[in-house]
Image (cartoon, rainbow, N blue to C red; front, side, top):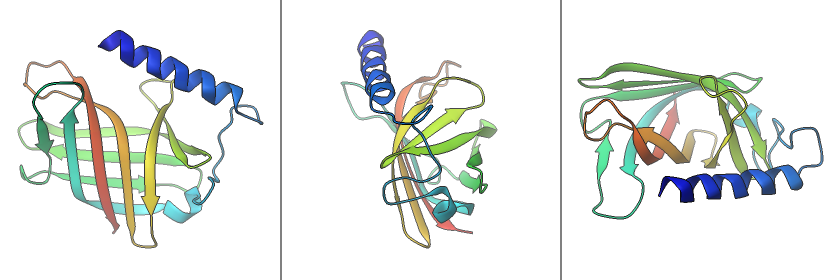
Length: 155
């Protein structure tokens, strides 16, 4: 399963590289959305991690378990996502956001040179992001491939 995910990621990366017109193909301006539209502070109203792959549905709802999530986005695309997961503590995730047409492209600081692609929707007061993630569903200290769904309102 992991090799299939890597193959799909490689295909997406190849498509991304071949379809770009500037140096890295990303910009602070997307097709219908820009970083300036989403910059600011956001509070999660939904933060769900779902185990990726086949088999029974396994989900972890951060808010339902008593946790929280906040997102701060700067005008230059730098971001900080803070997840407070009960029993696990606070996890702070940082990186750089940009756009490739209508996809949100994220380069996490702990994986320089590697980008992940996310779906994104936004209004003046709401922000929804969904895509690939990792999460330790069974508490064994090892993250499993996951999908994340995050819905925010402006703080």
